[in-house]
Length: 132
Length: 233
Picture 1: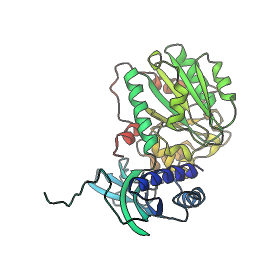
Picture 2: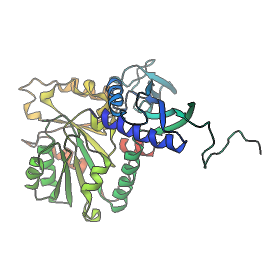
Picture 3: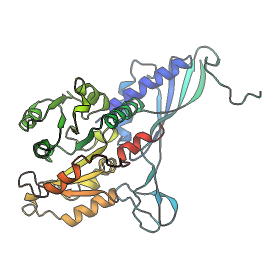
Picture 4: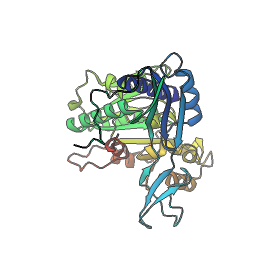
């Protein structure tokens, strides 16, 4: 049951990131989770709720996107979605697929923040859409 | 209140992964080969390690870090091998992380070592998420646990580089089906190198010792652990 320490790391990271964006209130955390991350979704949801009490993430939502394992099949020369982590082989031709391309994710992809002030760019903000 | 969505894209275990990467670089720079052991409680990590330290201690400079929730029993047992051993007592934490390894190494001169073992806490779940900076991870399963262990804990087998089936002196008594066990290992981690040993009778030990013996001037291989570390985070 290491999901609690994972939840705490996540909350610390989100708090820091929110502060960086001038907010002290996080309303949602969007997480990408792979089956080979070693993290159990339900245990993480529960730990998150407990660990977020009294932090800027209290009552926030943890939105988990579960991504499948994708491996490379050398026989088909193609990327394949692996149905079960008990059997790492190509679903089309049954060749073993040791090369895993996706499935270990434990990544915070986005945060939903609330702030008292309307948005203003942080100091290191770079406007990618700016026309020079 | 003004709502806003910000893109982050950050690995939750980034701190651990960064530290593990820096440890791995230190290990490589000082020329010490670092091998970790994971298994369920009672699979025989400590007994196997005691043998490895005793045998390899005769030919190279070897040391060990051992993780345990509460006791120092393992370190005391391993100290009989005369190799330097340090206990990491994790308290209630069910796994080792890179920071615990770094702290435990304080004061040791890595350049004085050829081979370092890290014995994780007995647990087949939690250690899979934490890179310790090791160059090779051994996952142990004993014949008494049953052939389906890899299917029950595919993630830990997937993060490991080598499987070691232990207590093979008991294989007949528990009607262990070696063929099925190997099939299951290959199913969750195709191509995984597998050894069968008994730390009691020393059956199979010479093959494992030969494999673990530090190869001077060997070409470093891309292990699972180092591959994970080199992936973008």
